[in-house]
Image (cartoon, each protein chain N blue to C red):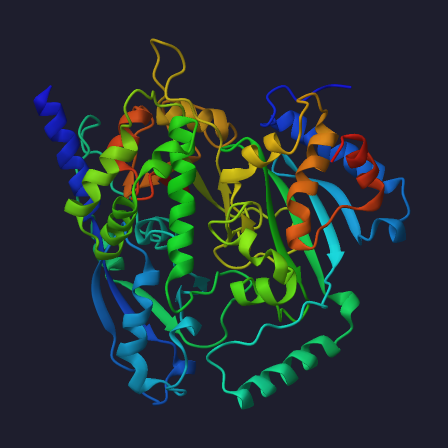
Length: 312
Length: 215
């Protein structure tokens, strides 16, 4: 038992420490010199949010800006033509938009993270920071105090808690110090601060797991009732009530859940045919026990945010 | 009349039945009587939601911002008038009442629809143009109805105002003595409880049903 607990802890930590190198340049339209400015380089955690980076980018590029007085709340990031939601975890954005091939398990039983040649080619991930023409129709505007990012994060934490326990009592019962510590752990990306609060949230006493907080992100398919113009990189976000077990003997797997929620994309519960689920850069095998996946590989807001990548 | 079985919660099927019934009764009344521009049940990605469009009421006075010097404030006010010079019929608030599978209650996402996009979803716009000043306390995080934040709309994935549903079940439960109500009455109850805070109000023809419920 202790070895499986060790594996769980070690996986949790691996997920927490996953990171992506970023190379961020100032958009030409916001740059006062004809030549490009220096790039901002950073190794940034997959579980963290680009919103935290924006004040630093504002400071770094301030000498190069056409309008040096522009507020940091005007800043936004894009990859190619896709405006990036700064309140999505970086890892989810990368899995959705970078085009990098996900990592596959090497022998079908053990999930080894290895860097493919293609991935090295796409790294560092090259992003652009803009200080004008905010795509307000598509992105929430960041406020100077970072309150919106906090609100969006807490909304997700609350909803995940409600799904897991059927009430919002666990999150409401955290005292002020705990709530502050949770947000600090996310801001500072500090596992030792995060882990004790996460334990309280994930394993409240006397409560059985009711539902698995899971969101699926699909490349956008045009919809007839949509009155908005579809922008590059727009997504359909799908969630449903997902039970941890199908019966007392049959646990829910990623495959059985996907087959239930998106039957046209996941016709088989065992083998990906048209699409595959990608989490933390890995193509997750459909046979994975969903409750175990939740406990080891959820994002810091308690959700499994899964990119659905089309195959072939 | 079929009853909502798990009041104060509602099932997806009951919610969708309520949406249909309400939109049918809207179609049968005159628009001018309702005070709304439109109300329809929309089916998207296999789920139904209630879409209500209402002209933006601009009467709310603008609260002065503390950081502004008097001079800047004056300029700000001028800008405001310039904003409102545009034909107001083009500016409307769209309210989408959507079923939350997580919370098993209706949730609302709303935003100002404006061709020039002068009213992006920010807290400043919310309190200047949508929330009547006397309700500000009830709509902050510690207030009666649960906090209003900016979040992505579940169907369009675009930013909108969002009332957090953590208090919805409690609010509904305490505003009604009987638990025997149908899906349409449930939605009317919901709109009565939350609509006033966000200029949605209660359309007159639906208010009659509300009165029958003793609201």
